[in-house]
Amino acid sequence: MALVIEGEERIAAPVEKVWEALNDPDILKDAIPGCKALEKKSNTELAATVVLKIGPIKATFNGEVTLKNLKPPHSYTIQGEGKGALPASPRAAPTSPWPPTERTRRS
Image 1 (cartoon, rainbow, N blue to C red):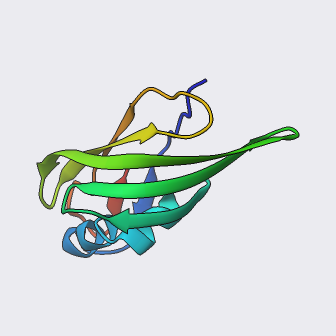
Image 2 (image 1 turned 120 degrees about the vertical axis):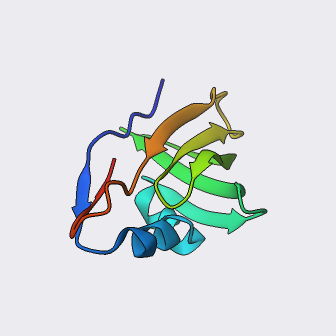
């Protein structure tokens, strides 16, 4: 089973401010569905605890989040890998606060 996160958000803020927010573990935690904890290990590695519930089944996963392909302040790829009760293969999603306009796009 894959967790798919899709979509695009328009954020009324300068690109530098959005980049700073996307690299703040507290803010990034709120952007990851089910994420209960996110601890920075390095500038590109974070430890995560994510809770997923499907019907009556609830599972807690400890895992790793890695930021790759960094192109500050324009984009990076966020990759997560679960280490919990069920095996999970790595999943990646591009994140980009580019282009720098009055409204910044996050996809």
